[in-house]
Image (cartoon, rainbow, N blue to C red):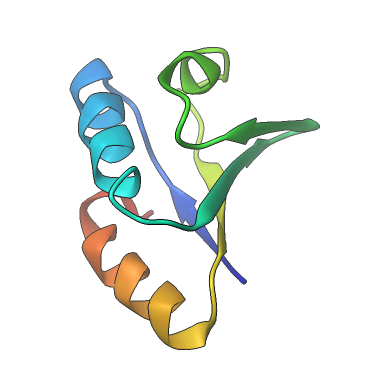
Length: 77
């Protein structure tokens, strides 16, 4: 399991982010304050305050999580 901070400050970023992580067979959670949302849910993401950075928890083993983080580079804060 690995946690990184990301920014999804535009509609286009949200769309490309959801398309990217849906390619993986792991679970992803977005944590904003006290809310925890399934990161593969575009409707769930739009319920968050996207003006602030969001924590993304990747539920994968070490090597897989590292390779996922590399692909998420455009969204990292």
